[in-house]
Length: 301
Image (cartoon, rainbow, N blue to C red; front, side, top):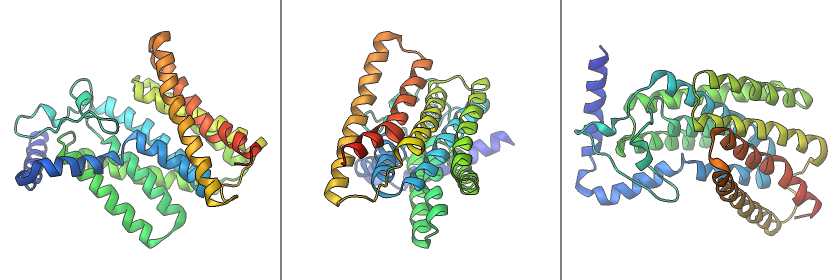
């Protein structure tokens, strides 16, 4: 039965990739751009923009669902240990290594099920859809998630079952995260954030990989950042002119990227470790959620 499923998935991927075989150069670029929307760097830009400029509460709930789903993804991948289709000679693998997208590093020591891109994109977009309750947003979210799923098939890095289950898990995480956050407010929601952070540590029983440590670090950074913001900052992202908001975002993004690459270089000198990865992501998210809002509120940016 398992053999039949894998054979069906292989046929689906070969058929899908052959649809674009007459213009692979163009479609390599097209699907790479699509898959980039599920990458960490894009989320690193989109979430602060939403949090600092547009809607603080929506961004918080998206962060809860996003970080939780990343942790869950790492656990399931290490339990299932499904090999990627990269080694299958009948399936075309598109090797990419640039600032936004990297499939080259997936060749070794990387599991396939479920798709992290599909799961994260689904969790983020459907959380926004649950929160804002707009029909157009639901339509856009569904189309975007499906395109990201298809991009992973085209690039030859995931099986159809990987992206399907990933998207469904993202939807489930979005619903649970939205439901729990909306049922709790004030101090109760802060307690919820720390409960989620503490429970995320159980993931280390199943998946002791860098991505798991990063996700857990991000959750703790978020919880402590939210505590700082709720107790001592309480900024309003809608305050100020659009020029002021854009300056706030650009300055914040530059400092965030500087921290990201600066801390990575510093911790590499100290001796790369998964614990330092967790600390690095905790600092990044804490800066984004708590420290930077405190600074730009005091400076009236």
